[in-house]
Length: 145
Image (cartoon, rainbow, N blue to C red; front, side):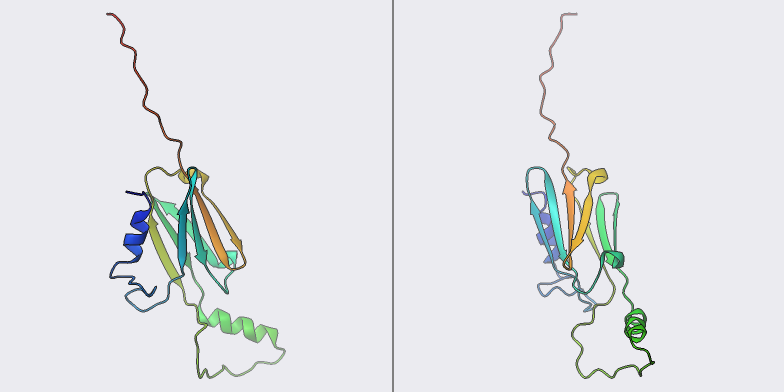
């Protein structure tokens, strides 16, 4: 079994379902996970966010990616761009809203937690999780006692 196949099992369970929504119907970012002989790579789509909006943490083999983006901050940012204060807009249709989120991934045991790096470019967060080198079995010489 592939070490990261549990990502697919975990993401496609009843909690997340196939539509990318959690039980509370809050949208969660789309994620792709790939692997090679040296590392696992997680790419998460985060349109409208910057590296300052996102937090990553590894604790006891669990990678947690979260972002706090409150409605009040978004509205204040828009108002700061205009000289005069405007009324809060009345939305007729609102599909671009991106509330706060938190996603956690249980990592395989072969990762090097100290070597994890992350980059942010064009609305995509890329997390590179290096693998520990495989420890090859060694033959032990038996000496005469």
